[in-house]
Amino acid sequence: MTPFPLDLAALFGKAGMYLVFLLIGFFFGYTLEISGFNKSTLLAGQFYFRDSRVIKVMFTAIITAMVLIFLATGLGLLDYNLIWVPPTYLWPGIVGGLIMGVGFILGGFCPGTSLVSAATFKLDGIAFVAGGLVGVFLFSETEKFYDAFFNGSYYGRLTLMDVLHISTGQAVLLVLIVALGLFWVAEKLEQLYGGKAPSTGSKPRYAAWFGTLALGLVILTIGQPTNADKWNRIASEKEALLKERSVQISPAELLTSIADDQLRVIMLDVRSERDYNLFHIHGARRVDMNNMLAIAEELLIDPKIGETVTVLMSNDEVAATEAWKVLVAEEVPNVYILEGGINEWLSIFAMDDPNITPKDGPVGEDELRYNFSVALGDKWEAADPFIHEWELEFEPKIKLEKKRGPTAGGCG
Image (cartoon, rainbow, N blue to C red; front, side, top):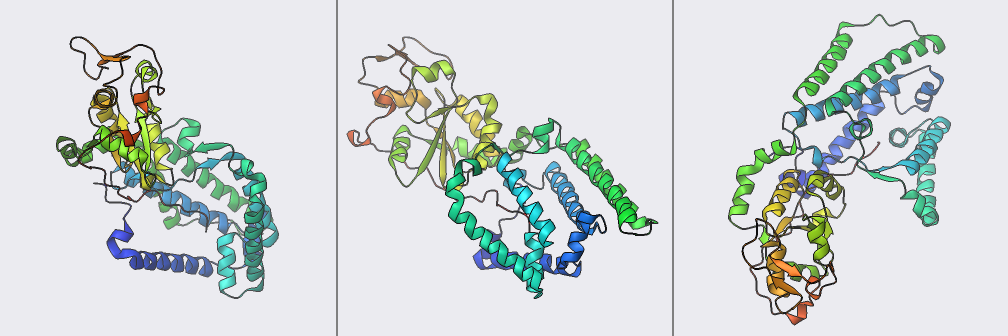
């Protein structure tokens, strides 16, 4: 199994986890303070091209984290799906960025640096934090009036790789080149507007630049693990679950789970459109097998995925099992397979329906074993059986694991 990111709650308990967070926050704040980022005059200098240390520090942090993250994922040491990538809301993001940018220019602080300034009892920092709290209150009281805009233009987990249609390694190199170019431009502007002497350079700095670019080339060379690579790392453990029939739940358990108001169930039907239109369970969503990686990404950014059971179904179990492997390899929690597929479901809940009859003779692998007088989709009575009309006995297999998922984060 991929060891990182670490599950701090499992390692140290809740109290230990919060202590780690406290220590990280303390050292982050301390670093900002000793760097002079508690001074609004210094921070504002970047907007007048007199002092570019903020840009340099922030971009250095970005490219360092980026290189280490994708190097670790490329080597199989880190699971990228357990790292929070904030979903993109395009226009709200642009408007929010403009508001924060104007506030930064006028006040001389961003949220994180204002807290550092306030912690060192600087009056402008305290005033900025107070203004921020007022803004938070006003936003919470007025958001209902522009909720559609605030939650609009949603693009999901969007990255440079998605936008530019390039590989992760190419994106890493592109950002590194842009960052180094920005550093060079910032220094030239400092000389022009801030009166700073031209930099004579230093061996450690050049070594850091070339070393970072070299790591970028390594990332480009080794690439990122495919879904097949991820499955191969966990195959021995997960294949055992399939053989033990631990993840194949009976139609009776699925119906009981659907009827349970305390349980959230997502049903994904991976069959052909034709079979789906003939018959599907009420509430099941048809998904294309070739689109399972996108489905995994969609599920992973769902804030309630840790409280959700995802059930995959095909006519028998073959296609559903392949889809299960994809989702499990992507670390989607609580994924199960409908035992016997739709054929087994129909053998129980459609046995008295004269319009749904078994086919004569053998059928192929993962094919429907029933004929339908008409294509009704989920309008068949068997598609939405009333649980109280059935005496159902089954061995319960669903064990809801509130598995750690991507953890939200943001700008200090």
